[in-house]
Amino acid sequence: MQLANDTSVIDFHSHFLVQEVFDQCHSHSPASGFGHHQAPAHLVSLFEKMKNPRLAIEDMDHLKIDMSVFSSATVIEPTSWAEPAVELELVRRLNDTIAEWAAHSPRRIIGSFALPLQDMDLALQELTRALDLGSGWQTFRLRCAVSILETASFGRSGRRRRTSVWCPSCTRKEGSAHGFSNSACGTRSLNR
Image 1 (cartoon, rainbow, N blue to C red):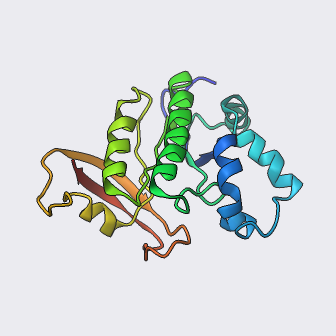
Image 2 (cartoon, rainbow, N blue to C red; image 1 turned 90 degrees about the vertical axis):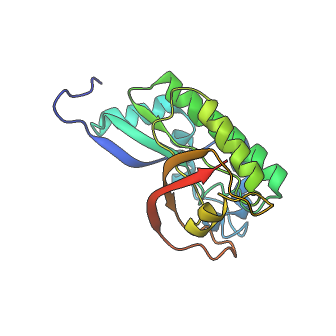
Image 3 (cartoon, one colour; image 1 turned 135 degrees about the vertical axis):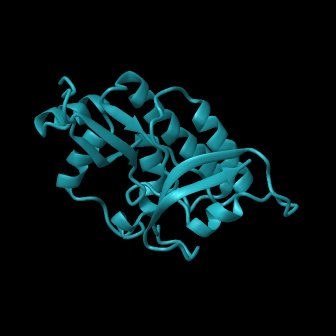
């Protein structure tokens, strides 16, 4: 599909899945009742479309969508249950996958990334790595609370870090005990 010259249709709420992350995380998700039940067959077929960029673009063509902003499906494959080092590996796999999707179809797929927010040093490390993944990034999504974003600007010593990275952020509660707000959007600066 060619992008329209005058008006483009952009879907700002699309999700992708990564099989290995799904296999490790789904039993920790609200969608599975935290491991209580399996996904019904009609959702499993939807999940298959969420794992394949070609199928996602076919759906976009069918719906006459020019571009989609893809983020990880955290309600289906949450990472916040894992120990910090494990969560880092999980979000790296998610970020690598969406970077590949966006690099393959940059005029159709807008990538976003996730951060492991249990450890701010790991989150800032992954932020730096994700920004270096390539030119496919056009938007940045951070799964974290505004208060955590604001405290991320300070090192363990309490001194302000010097380098700023500005990015739009959207937050939402993942069912953890972090006290995240249900919804907050805005532009935040992470100093690293």
